[in-house]
Length: 481
Image 1 (tube, rainbow, N blue to C red):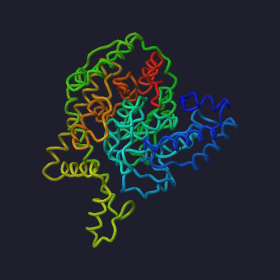
Image 2: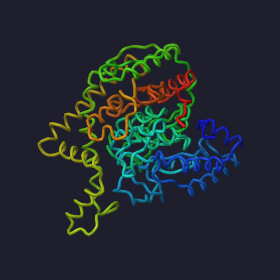
Image 3: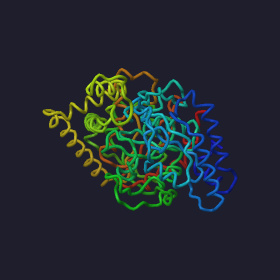
Image 4: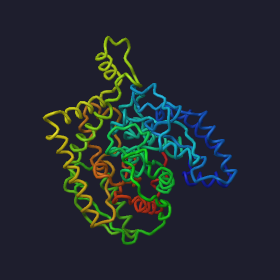
C-alpha cells in the first residue's frame, strides 16, 4: 500500500478496496519498524490517528468524503495541533502542548485526513540540513550517512521512506524545495499569503510559507487544494480566489516559455547536477516548451540580504520565549534577569542563538540603516528582477541546490558554506513568488531536484508543468528502501 501515490490511495479508499484504518495501521507499523534509523518523527500519535481513521471510514461509507478523507499525513512540528506536543524541534518547547489547532492542520482535519504525528525539523526552522534539532539529526533514506535537507527534513524523510502518504512543510528560504530535491520528492512553496500562517510558529514572518510535500505534482495539487485560502485570523493572508489545482494538470506544454537564469548555471554548480538539469531541459523541449536565457542580476546579493532580514525577524519573534509564560524555564533562578538569561541560554541551540544575535545586531541603533534597511532595498531589487524576467518567460527553471546531499556533520562548523546551499531557493522567498521542486535524475545514486518558479499565484501552471514532466519520466517513482 505504501508504494501507491496519494492520488492512488484516495481512489482505493473511495472504491472501498482498502479502509482508512487498514492504511493507517500499515503506516504506523512502518514508522515503528523503520523510523528508528531515520529519526523523521518527533511525536507519533497512533491513538489520534486510528480515531480519525475510523471517522474517515464512516465518511467514506456515508458518501461525504473529500479526496483527502482517510489519507494518513504527517505535519512538520511547528504547526500547532490541539492536545499534541508542538516542539519546533527545540528544547525551548519540548513540553509545549498546543491548546488550539493551526489553520493548516484544521483544514486537513476538516477534509478528513489522518494525522500520524509530527515530524522532526531544524530548531525553529533555522537550518538547511536538519542537524540543529534538539531531537537529533534526521537521516536521508537514500543514504543514512547523509542529511535530508532542512528545515523540513523530517517531513521529506518520512515521505521518501514511505512512512506516510504525504506531509506538510514550511519554506522560509527553501526549506520545502531543498529537502524535496535531496530526497526525490515533489514539494511546493506557494505564493506568500496563499496559505494561512495562523498557528504556525514563526521564524521569519515575511518569508515563512507553508506548503505540501509528496511524491508527485498530482498529489501536491490535492494537498494544496485543502491548504489554500483566505484566513481572517492571519494578517498576511491574501484574499484571492482558490482555483481547482488539479484542473490544468493535463494541459500540454506547447509554447510554454521557460527561462534559465544565467546566474544559476555558473561557478559553484556541481557538474553532475548541471548535466542532469540539462537533460531535464531537453525533455521539456521535447514536450513543447520554449527555452530562453534570462537574467536575475541581483541574485548574488540574495544570501546576505536574506540572512539579515530573516535573522532580524527571528530576533523579534523569538523574544517571547523568556521562561515566563510557557516553554522551557531554567531551574532555581536567583532573580528575573537570571531567569531570562539562563532559560534562553539553556533552551535555545547554537544555530538559533547565532541568528538571534545577528538579527539583534542588525536591528540595533546605529546599524539598522546600514544592514536591515539595505537588505530590504536589495529585496525590492530581487523582486523587480523577477517581475522583469516574467515579462519574457512564463516559468523560471533552475537546480534546487548547487550540490547533492552531503554528510551529516560535514558543514556543522562552517555555517556560511551551509547557508550557500540555499542560493537558488532564497530569492523566491524574498520576492514572495511560488516555486515547486521535483525529481530530475540522480548523481552518484542520490536524487537531484529541479526547481520551477512562476509569477504570483501561478501554482496551477507550475503543477501542470511538473505533472507533464513526471508523465514523461519516472524519477519520481524511484524509492530508497
